Length: 322
View 1: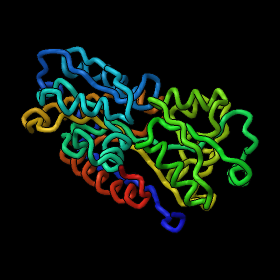
View 2: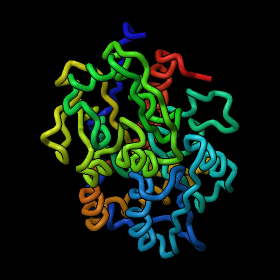
View 3: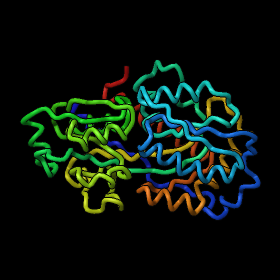
View 4: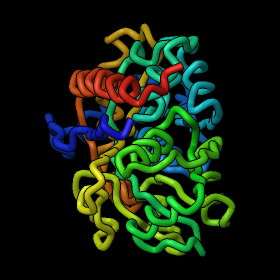
């Protein structure tokens, strides 16, 4: 498996078809909600996906003129939320905060799932983020070479927020690329409990989002798993800089149930794009160590489809499909 040398690379160049000011002016043309809108989060509260959903909900409520409620449905690597949204009425009132975990990776790890993630309708991109390989307090290794040496002496464990997620696939790719035996995976229902397990010393390692990593300085950061250093952790080198060619850069965005008509998706996308582009939302995204990511509905749909195809190849190369 080591010879596969998978490179986990998501595009980092995005097209801003409309500037933030123009998008913010589209409120009157947006989705005309007549009742509260739900944003379903597939992981537990406190993680990056949940944080992004709550930031967006605040601004979206002003755009739509109706309450926007965030509802967490964690479990099964995002499948519980995905199945719930897939079965929801395709009327724009039930959306999902999707990520590369739930809609780029999961459908290819579990192709017999009760729903097809690629059939969801892309509404708006929200943010992009980077991952960092981190170790628990007290771990004997403090640098990547020391970590690799330690893993050859004893079996290490790592926390993930589900076996069909980027947190899982990325660590498996790291061990293959470094020529190591697979680490013991300990899956949790969301990034927040997974991070707490590592911060509490119960598990050795985790590939975690940079936004959450910044709030845990007690952890040791071995390398940013991205094509370039994170501006939020500028002192931490990438794995590539340390001769481990693994890159996993994630995305977050809103999707609607399969079958949602364009007559609903397009005006809803305009309102949600305006919410994302709102200066207060942008400030909150930056404060959360996330990076801005604004696409029109057609652009996001093209990106959404491309990512599904890209990760399908990676999952097949890793041999983990069930």
